[in-house]
Length: 223
Length: 260
View 1 (cartoon, each protein chain N blue to C red):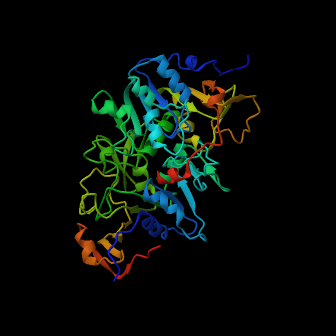
View 2: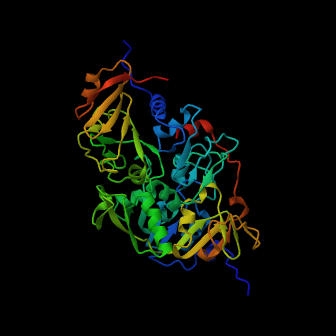
View 3: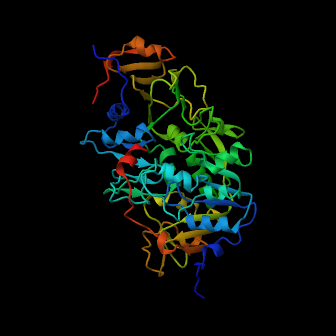
């Protein structure tokens, strides 16, 4: 049996990118979500949306072609691409709020078994930035959360109820962590895949709500 | 007489900003797209008790250099953080008032912790739409973002098409400071890349819209198909000095950029 190892940030991003389907409009949040751009299979045509006003932008800039007027939501300098469009902020959020974004990937501090998302306010800081997360969580047709399975002090981040301030209630469809792939359903949280070397019991121990084990439980495919 | 909205200096452009004014500040919070020279002029002008409205409230040059470690932040660059550092801000209305990392504390966050300033945190799209509403003459609108969160607090709730919506009011402002690429003397504007962002949304939303541009071209030179902000939304135009104009080859470190 494989050694118990937590997935790297890159492997989590690789797993998330498998959910990207041909033709989808995808918005990626800051952090691990941004890494997903490196992994979808090249035969898929994807349209990346960034809330600061671009659709179908190109890869991250090289040292030679950086342009201050071309950035993604994480502030990285990106490049142009044939088929790109540019728009104002109100237009960009009309796209988000209006249900025109197929898939959004966000990071999280906590997710509840009902799919409530908390990702903007650390209680000990007392002040946080909502940014575009609320709009994306509510507006995107599908929302995937990618995060470490537990907090820095080892506590579950998948909870019965979030105790941090919510970003939006009942919005998360899928959770990809360094230990598992979990689907949020009306019946509860369904464990679909586990990281190599980890058992259902191991994952359950680090997850607050009772996991429903999928009849076709698999091991997460590693890059 | 030929209309000419171009004013001679940044100082002149912000001369009438008064104490207690509400100011829209364009840009996204990244080094591009910030009306840097107008902000610098406003900090010289010194109006106090300002309410500043923007995606961020600004983090200041020092912190921006840490956040954008993959490049060198230009000398001339400023954001609303300059106004906070200069004790000119009373309140911020923003989606991203503090930096992502708790270790990076801006002048505004320091003042917030000391109880010297107020903040109204608004979801980014709601902020954009509240500004657009002011431009479009809409008093308020029902918005599906925020129910079930702190944003709902104290607001009128209505169920529309089976979904909860909350009542959000237009943000009425006295001045809008924006960054565009080129203008003509009558006020048409075009932008570059993602620097359109809140700049185009804010154009025409305040009583006075002031645009900071690289260049003023002859009337007729801007392709009408490309004009993103029609002339009637713009009241004043100021031209950046050579050093602050668009630099397409920005030196960056790709490795460091990949880590952000």
